[in-house]
Length: 133
Image 1 (cartoon, rainbow, N blue to C red):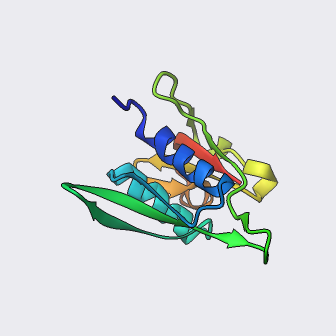
Image 2 (cartoon, helix red, strand yellow):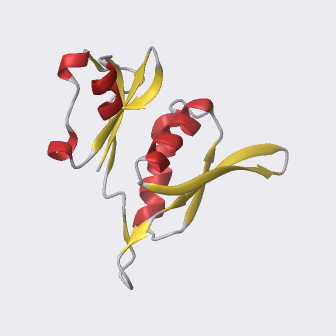
């Protein structure tokens, strides 16, 4: 039984990028959709869609690559910050900066799941789910 859907989602994206696959399938949850939506909006992923696979619906994520023949993935790193056994919370004035602003963190706030840049402008803090660079 899978205990951490977010870690599984991030690991699937990370492994697909390293294997230079153009797409990968993950569990279809609201949290995974929210994270994928932020990654698409920030330019880390091409797109995502819900696909019927037998009697269940999966989330198909399309990865972005840069460079000509080398096909270097846009996402160089994904790290789960808050784990099921240990949640990491940050107030609005102490939100993390990933790679000195070249990456981003995804925060679960009272106003929904948003990027750390958006949380900084709204002045809200919350649980730091993951960091992307």
